[in-house]
Length: 453
Ligand SMILES: O=P(O)(O)OC[C@H]1O[C@](O)(CO)[C@@H](O)[C@@H]1O
Image (cartoon, rainbow, N blue to C red; front, top):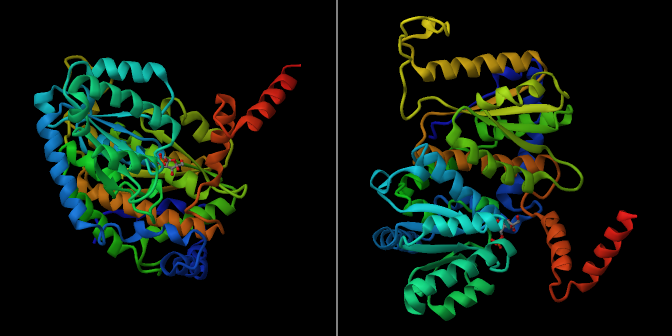
């Protein structure tokens, strides 16, 4: 059984007792669509059994490749965007020291995992190249298609650097491509050059792919335990199969957020009380946003980091437009606690807290915020996690993935496609002059001229 627990007790003011049970029939239908493949997007449900039915031969190869990278590289550059980036990034932040990126190599013990290809910022890429300097590095390029503009540009740059540093043959031994099993530009290139390849399974969309080679290779390189990550996810797979809403907390979360959405709470903030979970929210935003934001509907996924943002967004959440709901991922036991010391004078008025643990204060802050936001008209749900370790993270990933599948079907949409992502790409290709997109470019330039008048 997973050690995650879902707490909806702060919803009483917003959701009547009968309402959850009254969602059961709809949840049964959503469960059947998800489990039996009768819903839209059924070809993209293979993530459901990824924690238990993965390719063990590939899993062993991932571990071996991770060991090789650990032995010959100080840095691993992971090149990817969206689902080919966010899951890995959030896992590295969640599982390592708060100052992972600034740690001394001897303290970090394993290669530093850095990221490229997740924006078009030239300064970022320049600075990253400078940061790597003359350190030994390898590259893990992660792209299903191999033609996504952002990672493709970054990969050209890092491939050239590798060739300059290690020669063609040496470079080829330092490039690891995670891509489609059979098709696509990257797969073709990898096979030609002899790069070791790993698979983004066909039935797993980018935002559901962190428990495939997409996340597993770089997470393993960082020194984290991918066996435990998968064990936590496998236990979650078992825990969240029963469609009975009284038993299944991931389904409860899906049902409650839909009840609230239908009452006008159209924006959901995912919140944490731990700075190293900021990227977890970014991963969740893609999962929720691409799964649900379509057909001119869906909960808008946003996030806040507490208590930091109580001093920026706090005012709005307390008193702004009443369309917000909050989901807190609350860590119950931090990896390290700190005791508040005594001070000679008590000018800051903190004597009443001396000798108390900081996490106790953090938890009181959380309780205070739930009460304040509730009183201000914001429904709050909480997902409690016991620890920040691999097992817990595996369970947490699965909790949100399965909840999002159910939630999408409850709202009558296909939770597994993302047709809207193409619109900006088409326009960008038009403006960049990509062959085949000339007409789009002409039309956009004409429109821009018209707007200037
Ligand atoms: O892996 P690719 O093909 O480079 O695509 C990158 C990302 O773009 C999307 O297709 C759309 O955002 C994601 O699903 C995917 O994670």
